[in-house]
Image (cartoon, rainbow over the protein chains, first blue to last red):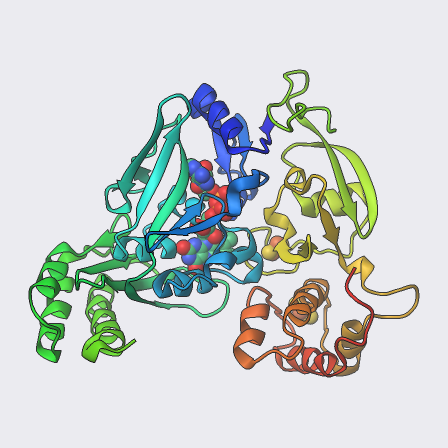
Length: 272
Length: 178
Ligand SMILES: Cc1cc2nc3c(=O)[nH]c(=O)nc-3n(C[C@H](O)[C@H](O)[C@H](O)COP(=O)(O)OP(=O)(O)OC[C@H]3O[C@@H](n4cnc5c(N)ncnc54)[C@H](O)[C@@H]3O)c2cc1C
Ligand code: FES
Ligand code: FES
């Protein structure tokens, strides 16, 4: 059975009632690939792509609150650099017009570009269960293990909240074109008070943060020497594997390289 | 109102759990079909509407040969369920020519020799139409970002780029994309 609610409340009620017996479908850019490969055989489908509130972006208290169905195409126009750049790197326009940020979180791929940007930005997300209300949690607490998350079967991701006044940047090493699974990607963000966020993709079972590196950056003024230290520290905090795209050693080294580059180009001397 | 959608368009009736009453405006015409709910837009168009101009190749979102416009925006029809286009507008390659008069993009593709096997061509033309509608004079970045979802295995991209650039020079004089 395919359910196609037009309002969020109805979607939430269906999810709460059917729980694990219904799969949420947003842009379908992950799920329809799985359907085509015979890897997704849903009992029931909850199509969120027609929910009227899905595309809403609100700004309040120097934060953007993004509804669950905000697409990568929308994010490319958001003045939050790391998130916009991550979104622009995803697929081609056809994928960006359909794929959503909530779907990127829901898939929880280790390579999820949107997830990495959100981690660096210390973003929060709202998980909602009809009848029980919403819980807010840092995106940092969402990922538990390989493709395992905090999301309960009765819940939907309803919003993602990102700071609007942080400096941020993002970079991916990967193949150019729409076949774009990253070899490594990195995001760095800094609050107006000087608090850093550092995150990496494709170097662990899920998108990773680098808390020791962040602590190092938070403790002192940014200098080329501190950047070198941070780049070395970051390499100790990731746990990449070798596969057909790249070796573990290369990925580890690239984490240091990307971090050095992002910090130097976008954060040193108060640039940006 | 589709039969398995409630009054507020919400929960389905348990009467039928596999057939979806699809209603959609395709190339300006309202189409209604009963389809398995898991039918992709690509197969709805090709197998249920005899609109075989839209091509399926990878069916995994990688190649763009299945590109159509959904409410004006390019999407991979292989990654959208027909049901997800309920009461929307879909534009396919069949709508580009008016009668025997080819669309400017089709003309320029012919003139530039931008097609060999031609399998990628309908998708490229739809992606290019969307690009030029948004950016009639695209910068190199806009051009790349607009076309990076489409792959051609035969021609290389030189003639294709040339054809789109030439169409851009005569844009937006040609007939509007419906
Ligand atoms: C050609 C191609 C290239 C791609 N390139 C990239 C890339 O470069 N980087 C990248 O990160 N990804 C990439 N992707 C993957 C994909 O586009 C993204 O992960 C996208 O963000 C998924 O969003 P969606 O809306 O399409 O999700 P869907 O496929 O609809 O859903 C994905 C998962 O999220 C769950 N979900 C969706 N919405 C909710 C919600 N509101 N509440 C709870 N669960 C929900 C679904 O149940 C499902 O498990 C690519 C995919 C393709 C086909
Ligand atoms: S067939 Fe749809 S993208 Fe290749
Ligand atoms: S002409 Fe054959 S794939 Fe492009």
